Amino acid sequence: MKKKIVGAAAMASGIYMGFGWSFFNLTVRCKKNRKESKKKWFQLHHTKINHPRYEHEEEYEEGKAWCRQQKMQDCFIRSRDGLKLHGYYLPAKDAKRFVLLCHGYKGSGFGDFANMARFLHENQCNLLFIDQRCCGSSQGEYITFGAMEQYDIQKWAYYISLRNKNKLPIYLYGESMGAASVLMASGHHLPREVKGLISDCGFFSMESQVRDMAANWFHLNHIGSLIFRLKFFCRTLAGFQMGEADTTEAMRRNQRPILFFHGGKDTYVDPKNTKYNYSLCHAPKEFVEISEARHLCCAYEKPEYYRQKVMNFFHQYDT
Image 1: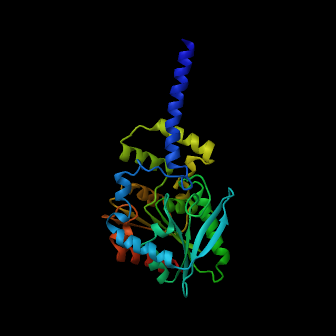
Image 2: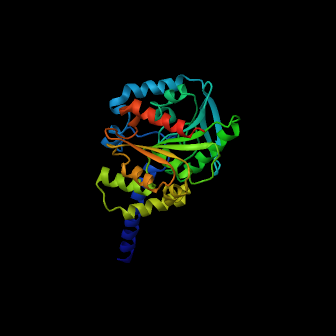
Image 3: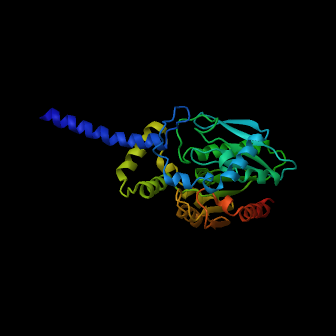
């Protein structure tokens, strides 16, 4: 009888931790070097309608194609935990500024900035598209929702600064997880030339984002035990604390101007995240909500308005 109880307890414990591992494996562990399953059960309605391809496929593909056609320079840095990270550099003629482009969760610079890259380049912006850790040509096994990416962005900012002979203004521009990572990076020491940040549809913490996804996508409102298991695997396997992926302290410390964007119909990252980040920011700031836009789609829904806001921001803080 005792053996049966012990066996049942072991099985229950295995199932308990196994589900936590599955969720960790799905959300945090990188799969770029492994064969994807033929059936993507996680390809839910929310992910489809919150991608620019949904209703904006032509502009999206045209933008990506333009990026691929440019002759870009490969750039590399070494992260604080020893990963070789990759970026693409595209200089502009008579450049007036540098823009560091930080893509989102499992994304790419050419994809996330497909709508803006050409516009920025034609408006005298040197562009550095970075491959976030575990994406593109960058090394890494885990996506850390900004916990480690914030330090990668800090290093990329110094990479630009060391090569910025004319001391041009530098801007950090992030989309989704890239936006959250840029905001987190603003709490650290950055080069003096960094004049401002642009945050488009960023979240404020990994935990809040996981809870929102569980509630809104899977209708799971009580996931405390799942969060506990996810934190355990993040700490013991991926080497970071979930609590480190949080913008709160950075927003309280940051003194650089921030231009915030968010789509009113975003069901991937709830607009409340940007409103929270905006409320904590004590630096000069502006919040632009595009009411009709879904995730990553603000620049598609009102392109002229969006671009004018970005250029006004540059002109205001370039000096």
